[in-house]
Amino acid sequence: MQGNIKLCFICTGNTCRSFMAERLMKKALKQSNINFVKVSSRGLAATGEMSTPNACKALKKLGAVATKRKSVAIKKFDQKTLYVAMTSAIKAKVAGKVIEMKDLIGQEIFDPYGKDEKAYEDCALLIDKACKVLAEKLVKIGGEK
Image (cartoon, rainbow, N blue to C red; front, side):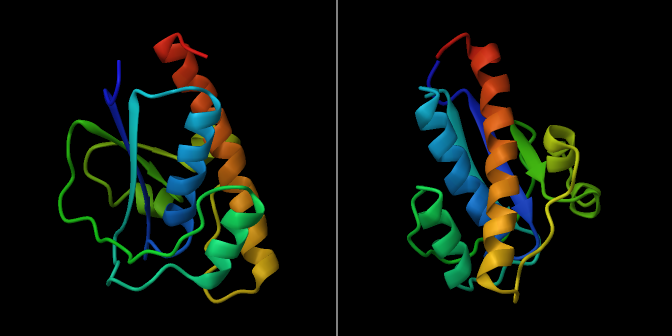
């Protein structure tokens, strides 16, 4: 069942939240032995900036891949991808199958951009929680673990 589901995390700039979500989701999938999901991330207004240093530090603390990369803008929406938006405002701008983090953990994911390291860590912890919830749902779909 490898690669049958495509997930794409969406935020504004793809330097913090969706970038961290992509990496944390990949970690959660690996821990759950799920190999049928392809994960990516994009930003509605991404400009090719590098991921923020504090996002990388937060990922490292949570044991996820923490290497920097350039942000990627969403160019078109694919009807075969499930988009996961950080907030309801972002969800409203997505044309396609979309859920928001609030659907998974009961709250939106605040934007830590420009804030201190602790704000990034707090944000990453919320994202990690949501990714674990989503991984549990995917285990049920795939019947694996």
